[in-house]
Length: 236
Ligand code: IPE
Ligand code: IPE
Ligand code: MG
Image (cartoon, rainbow, N blue to C red; front, top):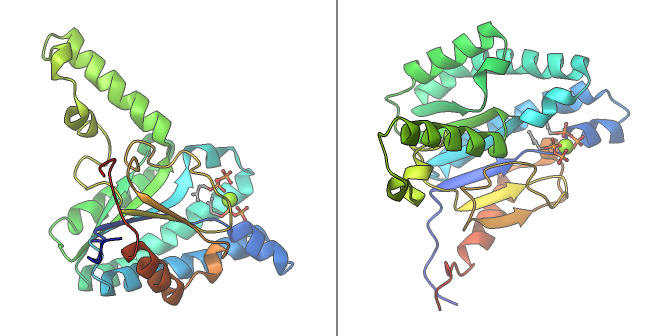
């Protein structure tokens, strides 16, 4: 064990368990999503207070489009509300917002609002909040391969130019460092198509807590656990 504290620059979270939270209370799934959106606000604030520079939240996966249309509609409605209601606080707190995922799948008004928020917050530098929306990591990787193949076909690059750095630069996440820590709530121990390339050396933490019940106190405990881990990157 080393006694130096790890640096937590980038925290990624798979916010899971809204549906089960609601079911346990005999409520519709939408109630879980609503409560989950409150947790998002608390955790964004807490991460900023803890000095975390990058927070990437999995809000909606490419595969989530296959859910009941009513649930998808409800989630998009919540997103609209969030983007509107949080902008002021986000600006005041110096948070830069970016989105990763397939925007063409989203309603035009949401996509427009997203671009506007990215532009309006571009100069904020306290923390970057990256929201993965309509995001799938395999899709992201395939899109990167397509871009690279096109460059090679045009003769702009040779195969030897393709390396880890170049590949990373073709991903949505090109401007942000890889996650140091990935947390998944709800007890599921899987990645569900999230940041597959980027988490090569991330520390993983799975908690049984359902996302609507996740708190800044629990986050602090997990960060404490992370700080005590030894990251080796394959070295001795
Ligand atoms: C996470 O909660 C939110 C989204 C995936 C949009 P779920 O809706 O997956 O909740 P569970 O996993 O069914 O409990
Ligand atoms: C992952 O959760 C996606 C988000 C949290 C947005 P899911 O609930 O969609 O994942 P699975 O279906 O349990 O793998
Ligand atoms: Mg789930």
